[in-house]
Amino acid sequence: MAAFSLALAILTPLPVAAQSSSSNPEAAQDAAAQGASLSSSGMPTSKLAYKREKSPSLVDPDGPSISLTTSETVFTMAAALNSCGYNDGLPDSEPIRMEIRNAVQKVLVSSESAREKRDKVCLFIQQHNMTGTIHDITQYISLALYLTPPPELETSVELTDMPPDATQVVDILPVLREFAAAVDLHGLWLIHHHDYDLISASLHDSLTKMILNTSYYLKMPVPGYDGRRFLVVVEPQLSPNTINARIYGADYVDIVSPRHGVIPMNEVRHTYLHYLIEPLLLQRRDSMDRFVSLLKLVQDAPIDYQYKSDVASLTIECLIKAIEARTMDTGVTPYTPPPDAAREDFAKVQSAQNAVAEKMERVRQARVDHDMRQGWVFTSYFYHEIVQFEKSPSSLSDVIGEMVYSMDVQHEAHIIRHIDFDPTVDADILSRSKPRRLQGLDLAENELEGGDIKSAAGLAQVALADPSTIPGQGVGRADFILARIAIMTGKPMQAMDSFQKAVTNSHEPRIIAWSHIYLGRMLDLDCKRDQAVAEYKAALAARDGQLDTRLAAERGLRSAYAVKGHTCTEDDADQAAPEPGQKPANPPSQPGDDPVAAPN
Image: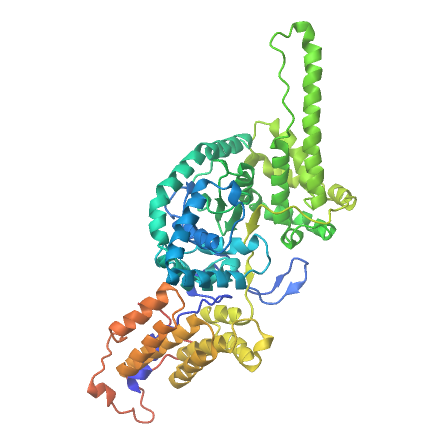
């Protein structure tokens, strides 16, 4: 087993990215600091770890900070949804939506194979129709933003770096690929890509006007590149009656569908205001700690729990609500003085102007009162601050600190106590992917990658003893973690046994596939090529739809896994074991060593 022992120093256990989540080395770098901390209620919590998703695949790292674009992956997903009965907003959609639906249907009518593949997609969607609301659709759009272009349609990042809602439906990818190929969605995209570009071009001026007007009102320049991006993605196959607005880490994304050449610009502006204002307020998070005591007064409001537990999120939303109320279209026709008005008519004209202004203000104030009853309890305060801001030459970035510092907490508490909250809240335009708390086997992965082998092993052992007591992906995933720990602690036979158990016990394609890959690599290094090839073939058969799995398995089939200084010669295979007390020429890694390096 000399060659087998050599494997221990170089074998790289790749972290599993299962559907519900697990960690990887890159994502671990992004995880929040761990240790004793306080919950939003002020009570101490156990050891916590959080992570945010990475950028969607359509984000160009070297591209502009603000862009209007289209996406073939979103096109593909939208076409699949339409083929499975997604008819929301169809009468109001652009004609191109029906053209694409008809083209897909024409293929389906003529091909039994295409129909069968379509039915598999539809069955998956039906089985994951959890709420009966638009949220059942948005999870697929969220997934589409994290896919590589067709025909691969692989996830562009590890599942743990994606929004949680996208990972809930990631298993649609194998049947989606088959359906897309069967009806040639890529060919349809090439046919209609120019039409998509024309639609985007028609929206350019109105979007630019909104951005410039908003920045002008706030007396701030249009942001340059600062690592954050604001993207508007046009997809006319979706309903024009709704907007998919999300914040993915540092990227602010709106997926819109035009109606008669117009998109819901107020909703797009809401996301843009988040893009502008969030960094200004988050820089002053410590100053908002004074407001924490007010959170207990909004617990009966119908707003999302995120806003009841995070004062920064509540403050940001309230400031945006105040700006929107102040700049809204009131529906009141502005007063235009008669062109022939004389000097003696000045009082009369002034009175008419004041009357119109009062009507507008009543409408705006009604909007503020409504927002307050919804639970956006700082809106009234910020509304009055914005009125004063309009009279100042300073930009919002210059005065926002004073706005925050000047709030009289006791006065606001008095106002909030007298609010009769509405029973329900208006639909939130913007959906923010919530950070995921790592626990159970997710935390075990995180501990393992951080070098805390003992903690990782303990969590995995708990899952093996009673899988119902710990979140994660069950016994198979725990076996996979223990197999990697065995490699890192120089226990080859135990590692092999645990990998084989992971194959038997797991229902996750990624765990099964990578267990076979690692078994194949160990067998290659033990000069058992035929058995290694069988493992690589098994990995391909169980592949999880991710590119790294397929490439690793195919590489193993092409050539034996090897490391520098190691060859599979007859002499190597027959090499005698060292005498007692004699160190092996190539000792296994010592307990606590981390021999992990990314596979080639």
